Length: 90
Image 1 (cartoon, rainbow, N blue to C red):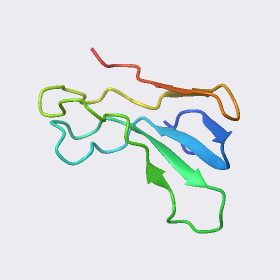
Image 2 (cartoon, one colour):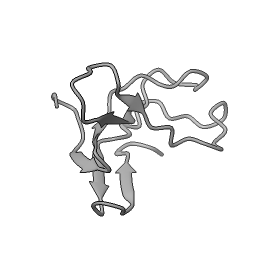
Image 3 (spheres, rainbow, N blue to C red):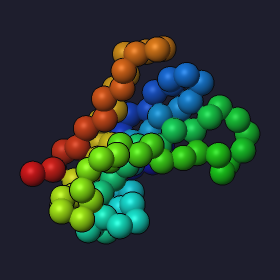
Image 4 (cartoon, rainbow, N blue to C red):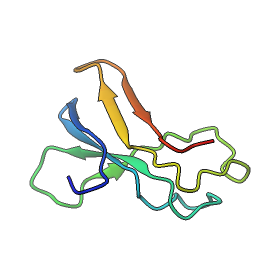
């Protein structure tokens, strides 16, 4: 985990990592939004994926530029819920 990364946690054999400076998803009206990534516990360096938390959101209307999504990530533990927050979304 590098500088500017959110908290890491282990949930369902995946490492969760917040990336507050991650690039925006395609179609969003922003350059950097931050994000949440899940990485299975494996030696493969390319099997991490970005968790889509904007399902149902109108990414054309919402401005999420520099919201720092992923600055904080918390889990209730195995089988529990996960909370990922942003520091700057207005």
